[in-house]
Length: 291
Image 1 (tube, helix red, strand yellow):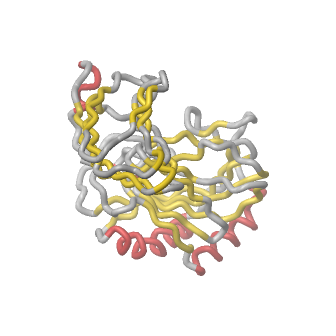
Image 2 (image 1 turned 135 degrees about the vertical axis):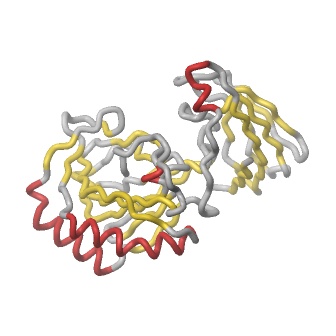
């Protein structure tokens, strides 16, 4: 069950994500928007204007590449509140296990939080980057990181002491934000995205990547290069960090990525991940991709 709230300026994302096994959903509209907020159905452009107390029952085709079924249009005046219940139905034997999997819990109300990197940590990472930028190695992550050149990203591996500093410096902040005891699992970077790079919107499904932090260490950009986060697949947020800033986010639950090509020479970041300490056994998923 999801409650979505749209205000003027919010950019809703498509309601259907290819990775989702949901096939039926019921949307109940809780108010009358003053202007805008229509619901577009399918690719034919059919639009409905929601009214307080009405419900929309809709079904999505199964399988990858099924496309957009329902899209919430931007609100032009006032607001729109929608209560949605989704149902997971095994539509094919090959995805039955996925369709019956438990929902991913939410640890925070919003799902992400922007803040400053601790001064000591940022100073150490920035100094290491400046000393070792020339020692980066080419990185290839097919299917996720792409670009207009053969090598869209590079990697400067952090020594174990710096990895430990990252985890120890961020752990308390992450625990206060989530109100949950956390176990550090993974530190990655410094990854340097190059001109034209994109990162596919995805979710980190492994229990080692339940919660994440992405740190902007350095950049040389012509325009902001935001991280896109989709709130339950219905509302899209764009967060552009400056060097010395970081974003905490629920990396397993919320789709995220950088679909807009990087306009600039490079963007260098470090990524840290945690999982709730109460999780004893990992869930299957992707441990490789970070932001």
